[in-house]
Length: 284
Ligand SMILES: C[C@](O)(CO)[C@H](O)COP(=O)(O)OP(=O)(O)OC[C@H]1O[C@@H](n2ccc(N)nc2=O)[C@H](O)[C@@H]1O
Ligand SMILES: Nc1ncnc2c1ncn2[C@@H]1O[C@H](COP(=O)(O)OP(=O)(O)OP(=O)(O)O)[C@@H](O)[C@H]1O
Image 1 (cartoon, rainbow, N blue to C red):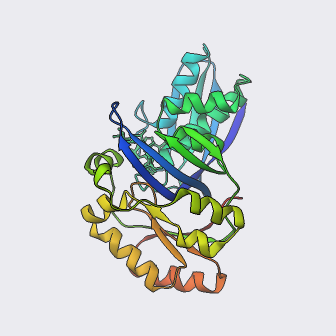
Image 2: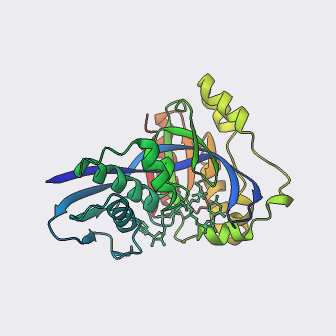
Image 3: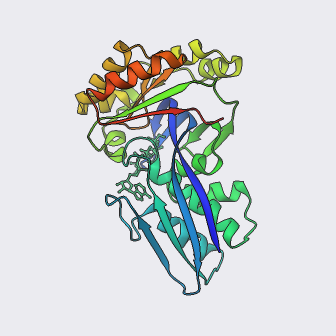
């Protein structure tokens, strides 16, 4: 039997960091939403007690380092499943981009195996399992739009933002999330984005106020480390995007655009500077 799952990419409309915790992670407050750029997973049960991963993308690990592998092993161990699984990953989300591609694959694997093996695991329990795999995985399990607190595992669902075009531009660099958090001095941050104002803007359906309240404190680190990201933000702004921000720890920069007529001009302008440019929509 085959099971199919989509693994959408996420963007952070707001990312604030309060402090470094004793466990080495950071206390965060983020607003995340999904876009319609997704990996596609195909899962097939194996009679043997093994996990096999394949992908057309040559640049991700296919062994126990793969987050989909880790998700399969976790659910098998925790629910005593002796059967095995073959997972094919059709990768569309750029890797180490700030779009939670690996995290979303892990979340899709948890959802898919719950269905394949009819385990009857609740969404809350899937999120709890996901938190053992990574801080973005719980949000990727539920999708939608949410405020994420704690390490990123405490979720509060909120309405979706007003529909718009999202242009993603990934400069040709890989950014390590651990490296960016490691260089952040949360106590020295001079500015914090306002979660309350962003939630208000989303609840009111005000596209202009959503753009005005975009903010990501990890930019203070990544833009210093990788000037290409700052340059990509400048280009996106100069080409006329209504709102521009770096997603996650970067390097992907996203632009929010309300009018379709502007989209192709911005896309074509960005293509002159960047190979990996995607025009997508918010997932509602
Ligand atoms: C940057 C974001 O992607 C924004 O959505 C997330 O905050 C990070 O999510 P993630 O990549 O799933 O993070 P994890 O894989 O759990 O952690 C990677 C590394 O990032 C750092 N990390 C992550 C989350 C967090 N709240 N504080 C941290 O300091 C830790 O050094 C950790 O070892
Ligand atoms: N299924 C997977 N897809 C992509 N990367 C994976 C996968 N499994 C493991 N990885 C590894 O995880 C790292 C990046 O994962 P991912 O693509 O989620 O980063 P990201 O998009 O920056 O995530 P975040 O938004 O959380 O920073 C890379 O080192 C990659 O080799």
